[in-house]
Amino acid sequence: MSQVCLAVFVLLCLSDWWIVGVLYAGWLYLDRDTPLCGGRRSQWVRSWSLWTYFRDYFPITLIKTVDLDPCHNYLFGFHPHGVLVAGGFGNFCTEASGFSQMFPGLTPYLLMLPFWFRVPFFRDYIMCGGLVSSEKVSASYLLSRPGGGHAAVVAVGGAPESLDARPGAVTLQLLQRKGFIKLALKHGAWLVPVFSFGENELFDQMENPAGSTLRRLQDRLQRTMGVALPLFHARGVFQYSFGLLPYRKPIQTIVGRPIPVVQNSCPSKEDIDTLHTLYMEGLMQLFEENKKHYGIPEDKQLQFI
Image (cartoon, rainbow, N blue to C red; front, side, top):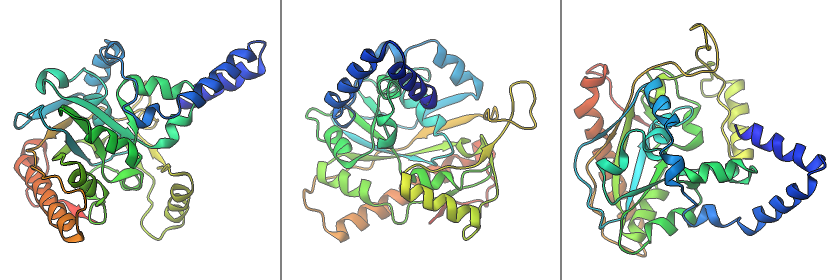
């Protein structure tokens, strides 16, 4: 859809309606900070009936383990990233799975790469769902809001983790990912591990083991552009052997128990490491307690890299 939006903008600028394109470009400049300041969500867009069809395609299910007090701000760590973060979008950017009813008083914001907020028209559309920029200033804005009730959702593994997203994969890029821990400490936001069973089952991917030519190229492009380019495939519209549509595999997104965080405006390395270890233990516990319900072999464990 982003490519379509970009093409529409280019065609608009080259047509007799070029003045509209110029005016919109001016709007882009004036509105450039909105994705950093909570975006511009629309409850109407989030409640489109279209999203129920999106939910039922897989299907997607949101599961709560405990109630979350809306007096706090939260940082949800979403795992795994998968190829398209389908569970993250379906659960936190739409009302199809009933987030508002399940967690009353809490407003979710899914953090997305800044690159996508530079695409004309597409940026305005994704902000309607509650997507905001993943830059640090954006997360800080949400986590520092007075009165609580805000939940910043970050796919901790980021774009690089999508390069390992394939059926059966349980490898998470987490060992060196500590920026979100520091943010939580600085703002006193409670941490919540979230595991989305089935997220890696939606697509197959070309073999790209570490050190291979393809993987080196993908890593280089990711460092340069900030966007990962996994070469994925799954099913077609009328056949199941090959295509770009995701497989119809259930996605069960489980929101775990919150980890209380005491605000520390200047956390030490030891403070960050201690909370990071606590978070990994909470995520591992969430996975171990639920894996038997979703077809994961008993001997399979999360792998942190």
